[in-house]
Length: 256
Image (cartoon, rainbow, N blue to C red; front, side, top):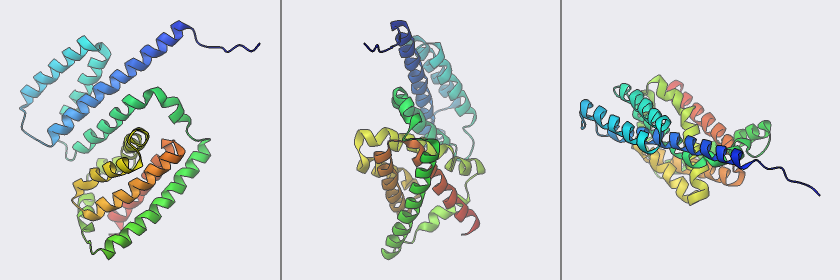
């Protein structure tokens, strides 16, 4: 008779505790990221002394409810965010860290499946390059439709991107694709479907104030959402997204 080897109850309990601890850390990181994201849209509304006092109260409450490590994670991230508060466009970091920590809170239990992905590393990279090619085709179609509709506000995007500091530009093809693919695709697609995920992704890009950017994000979000729906693997989508952003930024900075 074949026997199936399973972990002991003690090992299972230890794994459950570790998973719970990691999820608590992601939850507190999301809390601090989201707090500073909201505050970045309402600058100077909360005096620094009051903000520091409220954050300290938050650390104490988290320590009592969740424990010392989550409280330390909240306090450390909040302290870093507070010190970075005067940096231009720092809200971009808060936004991506909110996406990333929120997604990881829910995706952590299935991390092994997501890490393994749809096959070997070369296969996953190949899929990423293929999705990137499809994104280029979708971008061309979107631009043709935008031009046919008489929409000519692409200069708004060019102006904004051209003025971005170097760290935000680097984030656009590093942290940005990782956080957005984990949130909009790995988290949202299985839960709300391709259409809702696509619309939410497009709405995030409404901050540029450009209809052309909104339409382009809708097309590209649709491609990425469908890619994840069929592959159930975030890595090819991250690769494609990073390559597309890198190409787009390079064209804006050195061609336009």
